[in-house]
Image (tube, rainbow over all chains, first blue to last red; front, side):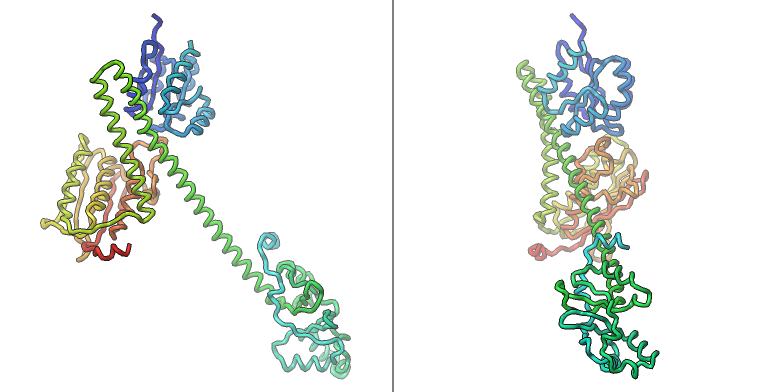
Length: 125
Length: 399
């Protein structure tokens, strides 16, 4: 069997990490969660994820700034970065555009979450 | 000056007429001179034929002419039109003040202070303007305009700020409400999945997460509703005699639970005799609990002290002091603004709706008290709630 795709989720909200992980992981997807912006770069380099989901509102370093930092590594591995946040959809769309990340997913929309994640992972294959 | 005037709504000169003295062209010079002699505040007379002004006689010029050329004999019996200034400045009554002043000042130096004749739009004589008065009027209106402009721009800035705070408030409310709702949606889906699998353990775990998310959501909604009730003046107050010392000790117990495993000591300092106070116990508890809760949240180590002291004979001060991160001086003003939470929402480190202090301040005012703050960044914060020992329930009826 083909090895599982790896999705890295960065969020400061533990409950959100738990639900998203439980919602996404299945026979094809392995979910790795990271509760802090600290060390994300290392995780990205070591784990080589196939997709990164970034929260926006996080202590000390917001997701959009974090995206700028990890983008060079992700681009080298052709790993898409996607914002996943409770913020307003318009603001997410704008942020995704200005930071040149692949897209955004609104928290709470489970159908969207699953279909977009599958889409990004398949595109990757 | 012109540039400023052009933008302003300047008075029409018709409203600034100082006199409507007039004489016919045939009036003898000596008769007119007598009018000037007998009326000391008469500065000028217009020469009017029918209704149309055709010349101007000013006190200075008339007397100058008469004296210098031995004029009384020479001109005394002449009709006034012979020596009147027939090129006097004539303006319509609806002309703007600034335009008239410009015209007046463009005249020959010896004519600059001559009165100006005002006519109706059809050209009939209306009255005279004094250049001196016009200049005074203009400088007054200029000063008022500048003042009004400054006030208007200050007001505009204020409104803009209020608007910003409001839209910030809305953005924050939305985010704060969405987070727990999204968690609940996710958990509901997970519960469905667990139910399909028939895993009771998972269902139990997920249900407890869901309950805590829902409880959190309710707390946020309660806060928002409290705030809107307070702002609409719809919060009800009921005063009764309570033991403040006991209330504070009880809040200290709850604070110890909130501090959890952090090395923070929670202390109560109070006079040995229990302090009785007439107040609204529910509101007072909410205020002190909010302050103590904040102290617990923002203090990593050290102590939190709740203290009670009687000030004078009629007031009680309850202080909540912590050794937490403190507040920068420039941030103190923002504290009591709804969602003014000092950290940027995108990067904020501490949970909270950002409504607590705003609510506490409003509640304190409702029970005739006040909240003040002493803080040094890095050294901790002390909030002091000052309350009257007595509150009359009768007054409440008026509220």
